[in-house]
Structures are given as C-alpha cells and as structure tokens.
Length: 450
Image 1 (cartoon, rainbow, N blue to C red):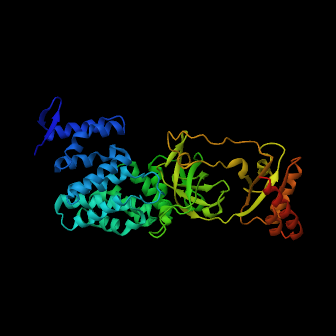
Image 2: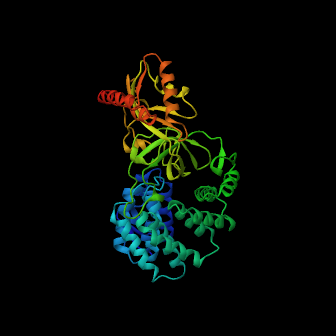
C-alpha cells in the first residue's frame, strides 16, 4: 500500500515501504528528541494509514516521554483496535516511563491504563504472531502500570510461556517482573531457565544474582557474581561477601517490591551510603534523617544493578527491598563543637561500630531532579557550612549495653576540649534518670538554636 505526501513545490510522490524505511532510519539517526520528532513528520502526517501508524508506533521510544505519549494518544484514537499498533504501544512503555527510577509511582496519565485495557481485549481476538505480539506488549505495559497491573501482567507472562516455553526472552521478562515484585524464588527460577535456554546477556545473570540474594540462596548468588567476574565468597549473613566501593543507594519508605495496589507510591526517600558487600546488597552506614523511612544504620538492604541516576561519576542505585533489620540502638542528640566535625570524630573512640552521626553537617536537602542524579538538572543548592550547634543520631549495635556506650561517649567528650553533647534517651536507657532529665532540657535548648 502507498499513499501520497507533498514534497517541494507541490510535487507529490508515494511514500512506499522504502520511504517508510528511510523515515525510520532518519528517526533512529536523529541526534536528539527534537530531531527525531521532525524526522517522523511524514509518518505523523499519514497516521490514518495502518502501515504508517505501525511505523510511527515503532518510533515512540525516540521522541521522549512527552511527545511519545502525544503521538501514542493519536495512535490509540485512530488505531485502538489494531493489534499490531497496540502491541507496539505496550512495548513503548519502557521508553515512555522512567524504568531506571524503579520505585517511582505508576504513571498518572490515564492513557497508559487505556492502552493496557485495549491490549487485554485484543488478546481474545488475536491469533498466531499477532497474539504473541499483543501478549508481549500487554506484559510490558501492565508491568509498568505498577502494582495495579500485576494480575494482568502475570497472566500475560504465563500465556507467553505456555505458547513458547523454550523462548529465553519470555523467561527473562517473567524474571524481571518477579524481581520487581519481590518474588525472589520465582524470579530466580525464571532467570535460571532463561540462561539454561541460551540467554547470554549479563542482565539475566545480574537478575539471577539479585533474586537468589532475595531468596536467601547464597550459593546461586555467589555463582552469578563469580560468573560476572566479581571477587566474592560466602561470608556475612550466609551470602556472598566481597570488597567493593561504597554504594550510593536511593532508599524508599515503600520500595516497589513491598507495595500494594492500594498504596503504590514510594513515600519518603533518602540517598544513603551503603557498605556494599555483593553485587546487590550491603549495610547502611549512615544514620537516616527521616524516621518514617523504616531503615536505619546497620540494616541490610538490596538494590538493583541499574542506576536511577548519577551524582558526578557516582551511580545512584534504587532500593529493591530490605533484607535484614539489625535493630541498632539509636538515640537522638544535640551538641556543640568548637570546630567542624569535632562531634563526628567522637565515633573513633566508641566501641565496635557505634557512631555519632551529625545530620546538621552530613545531610543536604536537594530538589527531586538533583536527588535522583538527573543529568543537566543544573540547580544550585546550599553548600556545606561550618556549624557550632549540631544535631543528629548516636547509633550502637543491639548487643552493646547502653551504659557501656555512655561511658565511652563521656570519655570521648573528655578528650575533645570544648565539645558538649546531650543524649537524654541514652542516659535513660543506661539507667540514669536524673541525668536524662537534665540532658533533655539541654537538648531542647540546643534544638531551639538550630
């Protein structure tokens, strides 16, 4: 089939299959989303024609989320009953939503849910290759709807596997779905099957290691990380344990794997430094600022291998789940110091990995774009300043007696001229109610001055 488009000075010629291919290549070669949008103009002008619509649906990934949805809305309005178009719309969800921001809430635009609903209807009337394409688009689209799409996504993945049980791509996709939903054993089995059927990409091995870690299968996780060239051995918590640079992790109050359709948003989020001990898990080594985060110093968290963004050259990984809550003892404090980081250095004199963590010096509030490490955000934020009065948390392992921690803290303060600290809850836990009352008053005064 061919149709006519205007060129030059009123000249018309048919845009046939070769013309469509040329437009598609121009879109792929475009240097940015504006150029891709311009290159696709012939397809947008001929959107009423099925072959042009199918080609345009293939281009959505190059338009950026805003224009991609704009074009997708037009395609759905004109071709919402065509399986070939619908299948490509569902697949495009991966480009039209931020797949790296794993814990983002579901897309608010109702267009996404409408595409999934049309795809679900199309399954019943499609056959052969059309049915497989629709199921693939449905599985991808429903997964990107968040937890509300889980039942549809799971049925679509199951249908794909029943029709092509030896296709490694279907097992890999199912494993990806199970991983993001915290169904670790099923994700492990799906990724292992994909590898057994010939999947050679590193992503399947990463997801195998992640799911095995979540499932508590240290041996399989170890094999996955070693296959990827990581130097690890079984160690802490019965899981792979190795030497890695510290990881920067964006921890969520409600990571996707721990959410429901009724409460499908991340809540409070903080970027934390984690002592990384495998490809996907580590120990939180900062005292969190927001108590409602549900994770704090010493807890063991899992994170994904694909960064949500970058801070400089440092990747920022999204939180998948919390493996272990170590129940560290945590007490709020306020204090004064005569020089920067004087209270921070008290940690050096505390037993084991007890720590004095001054939020006033260590925490920076960022806008959402900068907090997620988005390139080109370009926002200025208040730089770190010297503080005389600081507030924060004192954290200690659960087995350390509070009296032991308090004695060590007193000794550290004695060796830090001019420094003072008030930790009333620690005094109370150590059994010194009178001192706790005095320090509570001091804490209130100091808090009023910060």
